[in-house]
Each structure stands twice: as C-alpha cells, then as structure tokens.
Length: 144
Image (tube, rainbow, N blue to C red; front, side, top):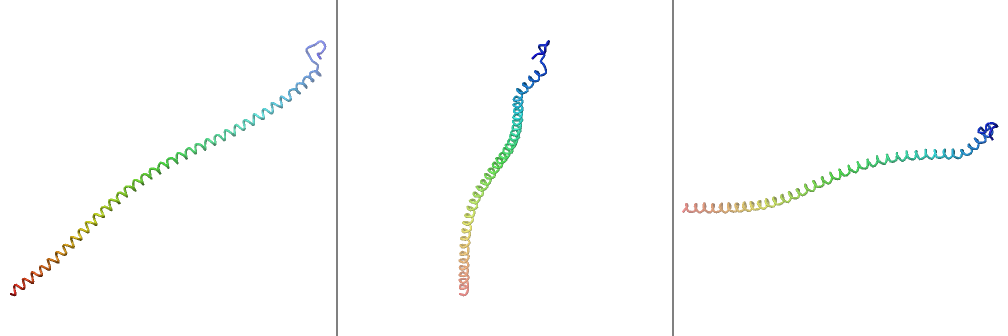
C-alpha cells in the first residue's frame, strides 16, 4: 500500500513482497537461460569438433588425391614400359626370324660349297688317276 501523503511510493514491506514475487517469476527464466547457455556451449564444442573432423577429412582427401595422382603416374610409366618391352620383343622376334633365314641360307651355301669341294676332290682324284695313267702310258711308250 502507498505511504500516506505519498500515493506513488510503496512501503518497504510491499517493495520486498514485489521483489520476492519478481524473483520467483524470474527464477525459472534464469534457470532456462542458464540451460540455454549450457546448450549453446555444448553446440559450440560440437561445432569445434566437427570443424576439426572436417579439417582432418580434407587433409586425408588431399593425401588420397596425391596418392591417386602418383598411382596414375606410375600406371602410365608402367604402360609405357610395357609398350617399350612389347616393341623390343617384336623387334627381337623379327631379328630372330631374319637370323634364322640367314642361318638357313648359310647352311645351304655351306652344303653347296661342300658339294663343290667334293666334286673338286673327285675331279682331283680323277685327274690324278689320269695323270698316273698318262705317266704309265708315257713310260710304256718310252720303253717300246
């Protein structure tokens, strides 16, 4: 109730009652605010942890991309080496075929040379026999 002669001023008992009622009304709101602050702190911590996890995942993705790039480079090198080896194998096979043909030709030439040598040897033997016959004939004629 207002003080006598001062209708707009409340006595201390009334002020205390009003203050107590205001505190009672404010207590749930303060509790809710404290809970909201705790929830906000928890959300911020979760966000911080998620940011850390995102940074780790981005770093891992970068490492994976580098590894993939290196693997693709190694694959390209391996393919180039394989193509080079296949070309060398083809050239070696071609050279082997050429060598086999040359060896066959050389064998034929050697056989022909051996045959010619055999004929020459036979001719020499034949000429030697004729020479011996001619010498014997000359000797017989001389004696006569």
